[in-house]
Image (cartoon, rainbow, N blue to C red; front, side, top):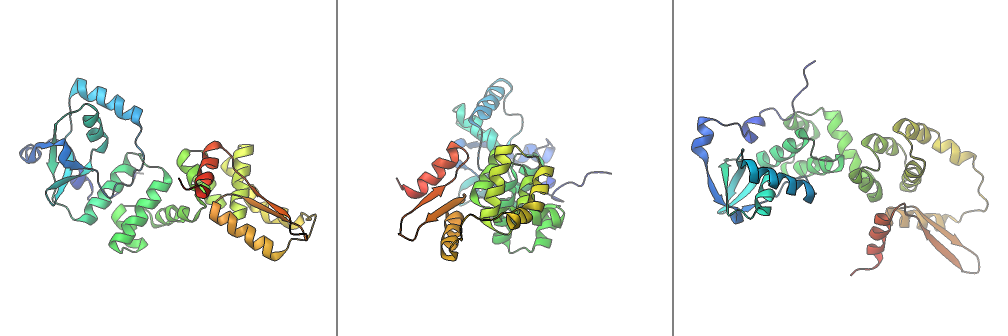
Length: 282
């Protein structure tokens, strides 16, 4: 079966293929007058890969021009941000561009589709890009999926990832867990449950299948476990609020004398630094 291509008609927007029309529309622009696409869904660019690309460009030249659109005298990228960054690394003053006359909606959609087609985005960036497109355009999920050339269920599954606690979203971005792990975690009702299972995934290196099994039996495990002491509902509520706020598992211990302690969990140094910054605003 032939694979369905994302974004019907998008190729006409983002194509870099040489043609007579392209050659006539191509000219040089000061690199300082080119700006990143404000709708760029990709958040991180590897400095090492940009350097490698710069070396390649310095040897072979810029084979494909950048694709831009013009607004208020400035040029904004549609396609080619890695090449633009590489050219900046090489301290080039000018680069070749093709200017496209596009609406903001077309710019946003083309940037999102192009990155997905090239597999440059992680699942959270895809989800955030889709959400931004829906917010800016007012598209329904059905309309957005048609514009993207994406199955509606797939699009909805991406958007559901944004409901995850921040710690788990960061885990997807860093590659600690997969989108399959995340979908399994979304079956749980409470944030504290998601973070508890997430911690076990990391600690026990669980596969997606193992995670799905754990989630399925999670409620039974909690029901059959007998607590050592009665938990005050107010303390439990406060514990859940702190868990949501910090996006990590939090335990509260409290005695009738008024003494107690707060236990905040983290799985790696990066997560500790994220939590630390929530308390210490420097």
